Length: 332
Ligand code: SAH
Ligand code: AVI
Image 1: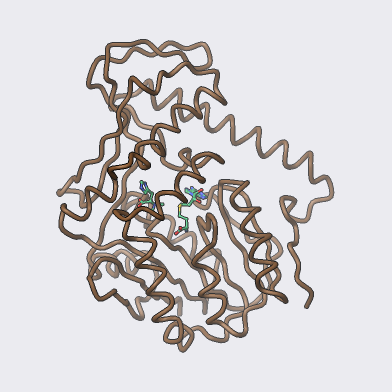
Image 2 (image 1 turned 45 degrees about the horizontal axis):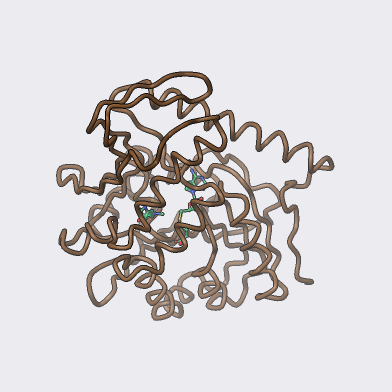
């Protein structure tokens, strides 16, 4: 089969640009609603998926290269080390569906390990990074059909254009940790319906560990993670006619031991007023906006979550430093 980036943004519809314009307008409307509601409520919060506009995705790529940020390099090494073992379980899979694929850098390792694969369906809300990755992977893996789907992976109900047959889901980087336990359960239940009986799911999950390792990973000394967080305010300024002064907010990362998660906030450094889409919001010094959670799991905790969501845990691999886990789940 020829190398093919099918249905780039169109999902097979004839009027691609009209459909794309409508989708982008809907995403901006969703962003506006989330920001106006999130700034009005107490405690203030904005869902973490809005961190990933084009600039946010570039900053996340920078995070993955930081010495403090162990998840990406650890998971990459694990895919190199355990690729053959993973293939022993799912080696005849023809379709790979990746949730929150981002730059898809680690995915090539999995694709190389799975000889029968002929279709790759990456799903991501961040359009530019998704399309760049789709083009790169299509070039790198001749014969692979790449069908990117732009949008929220928690809301996807169909895999348009996907071939029939068993599928392998892939959810890397511990992005599942950015969902609460309840959201993760709903996500896993929906993924089971999307992928279908007989399918498998490979999920990268960050492990609980010492705060000496964990906190710097989310508050690096070069301030790259802070820039990633603060970009949310810049995005509001760009897209929602906001007037946030990013110098008057600070990135805060702390570990909530009860909830087993890193929590990220933007803290106001002054008493100030901010406008978004003509609405005024007042911040007092120290007041925070909750922007992100990053849950950490023991192997047993994640297997319990998977089991309660209808998946059968098959194998869990961990790296030699006990930093990260890769879970293989099956539907049968
Ligand atoms: N899997 C990659 C990228 C992780 S960053 C890696 O391991 O390096 C998280 C990715 O998930 C980003 O590309 C972001 O745009 C995407 N994302 C976050 N929330 C999303 C959502 N609700 N729907 C679709 N994509 C989402
Ligand atoms: C994408 N996700 C798994 C990252 C994480 O580790 O929770 C996002 C991130 N936020 C700050 N640093 C990294």
